Image (cartoon, rainbow, N blue to C red; front, side, top):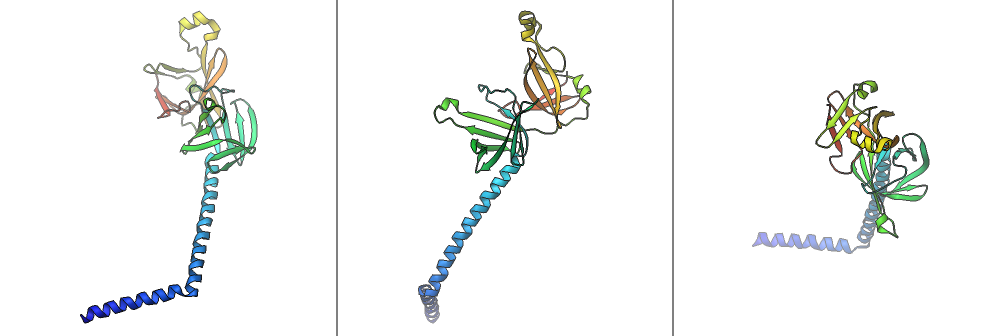
Amino acid sequence: MCKIHIFLSQEFLSLTENMLLRSSPLHEAAERYATYFESAKMKLFTIITFLFMNLNFAQNFEGKWILTTNGDTYIVPKINLFEFKNGIIIISDSEKNLQTNNYKIVGNEIFVENNSFGNFRFVSDNRFTLYKDDEKDAKRNLELDFVRLETTKTDLTESEIEKLTFESKELDILIGFNVELQKPYLLELMKEKATKKMKLKRIDSTLFICNYEAGELDSIIPIKEVNREFIEIYGFSRKEPYILKINRT
């Protein structure tokens, strides 16, 4: 009984002292300061996080990208390469620069010359999706994928690559350079309008397959890797796995 009585008395005394301390002006001031400090600290953390995210996003954008559109989206020009560099965005069609503008990142939105370019979401370090909504007509909403250009892995020279042929009969794909690739019956039927050729092109450290139809450049496809056994291409599809490997014939 005595031990229990002492225990309860100590607990009561501790509780009473705590209540007296909490009711003192000094404690109230301390609590207000602690609340203010925590609030200021939280705001500072939010600001730092926001700035870090913007800086991180800006760093992620640095480099060259190729635009991959939806299958039912038609864009002029057909080929669009984007280079993000030190707050500048350079747009080209692979042959010449079309535009050079300032850009900035605010949250998850890209602004080009203070006009919204669209909201973005990174799918991976080398791929992001841009969403651009039309307020007047939802049918005109855009959803575009940008794929970062990588250095092509190869030990071959360009002339050696041009002598190789790659084919997937399952996917009905034939890759060969500087030769006519169109089916003979279509050539006979449509003549020059049906011509289909591929050429190899280098932009910086990336090799591309350039597709020509009827003598005009129609599209370019970056090459991830090429050797005497296979060719691996990317940047042409919005569906996983995003990469296609085709064996040599």
